[in-house]
Image (cartoon, rainbow, N blue to C red; front, side, top):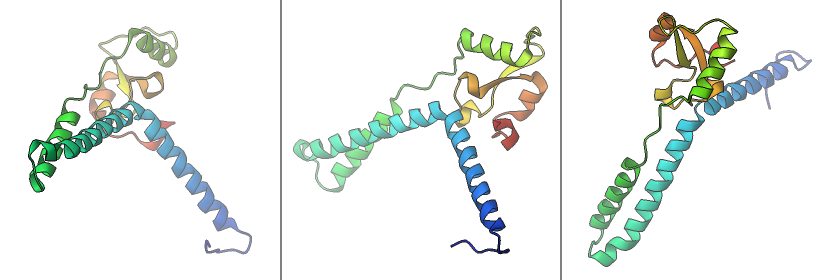
Length: 154
């Protein structure tokens, strides 16, 4: 039970509102980074499958005890390491839509503007319309791979 400061449940409403806000922010972050999350999930599944298969086959190949476990870890590591890397490419169609949406008829000048990932690509950000925006070149270079502020997510 949540403690109450007043008898009218005001604190309860504040706690519920903060909880909902927290879940919305978490959803926005995971949604913005969905390509990275999907890539890591796929790599994890490949690693687990590689580990399970190697652990099952290793004893029949003469590996015993900890040698079989080490062999399974090596196979799992190789399965993850050989996963196809994520593409940094932003399609021309998506780039045009983002520029049109953000500049509203102004001309895009690559000397002044950059197409920026709201949630950085290096931290799993997607190269999709909802995670891209046009920023002033200086502002984007200053931002680097920092995580966005809450206001940037909305």
